[in-house]
Length: 157
Image: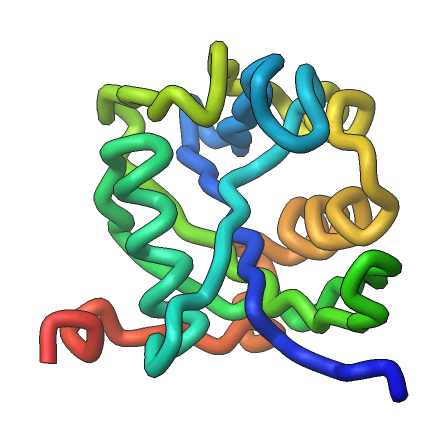
């Protein structure tokens, strides 16, 4: 029987520059799964770890960034892994970082770019990731009630 799990996260990183949203995209290394694709931060949820805790951990591991704010995006992405006969639900998060923050990528990625919403839509591969970007762009700073804010203090408790 096919298993249903939730063991991955997706976190979109943005900053506001001159009133415009800029999204951070990372290009996967050639020696990694899905080589050369552009994406936001993604990763695994460790045993006994909360999904939002995994999002912050992966953010730091892959970019060395610290969130200014963290929200749940009102969408859950999914993927099917045929080798495991497993469906995975992927919670989606968005965080804002300071506009002057320095990105230091891990060896999982070969480069990064801060891009506009329209550029990000063209660069990401998966439809679910595009939908998440659309929800963020459409509502960020306008109707934040659609996003559930996560207390960053909770992450240190």
